[in-house]
Length: 303
Image (cartoon, rainbow, N blue to C red; front, side, top):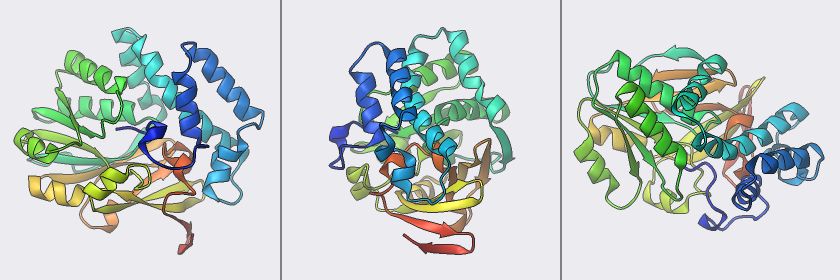
């Protein structure tokens, strides 16, 4: 689970906003000042060429949405720095606060008598939502463990913090399984009828070329604004094959609007399409290089 990979992980343009943000935080220990300086640069127009309005090609994108997209990237990079300095109680309150911002619009498919395969995406609140879902499942159904599949390309302190808090506060075991050699064989050995598996299905092939070659399946992500879907992006996903081989039921955890989440069973290819607000998707800096299509209200209208 790496929303902002290191710049050396792929051969793309060097003027990407997420790479700029990641490098800025890595270069200084004064993280609060770095955040303030980045926001000032956004507000001052110095980074307009790498912001969402320049990358997405969406006509009529408002100043508020353009700025919110930038703040989401900045704060997602700032979050692990803040979390590492929190006490256990503070971190629990922080992760739980997502329930005040996102309402559960729909929750179906969690009562399956067997392993669950949960498809989700890199939303700005992804760590908090997955933490809360694991805690909820731990209280409402019997299971042995949650397995989180991740790319493991760089140390991700949030994974360690979330795993520790789930174990200490909720008695939930979170296994962090990197998608490396023989990972599926290890997952097969771990999986029991009481296993829940988290898998992020929204990686653009351009961001993770090795994953794209390894996992030949593709999925679709619909990015939305207030008027509805505006962009469709092709992403890497082997969920259909992996879940079937494990005998797991697939459910989708997606974000149809900025203030809601939805959990629903995936029964058809069409149902497997993920939803996320455009400004809240953490891979938006890849728009313009990723395979994307504009979407009209009555269908796809082209790139």
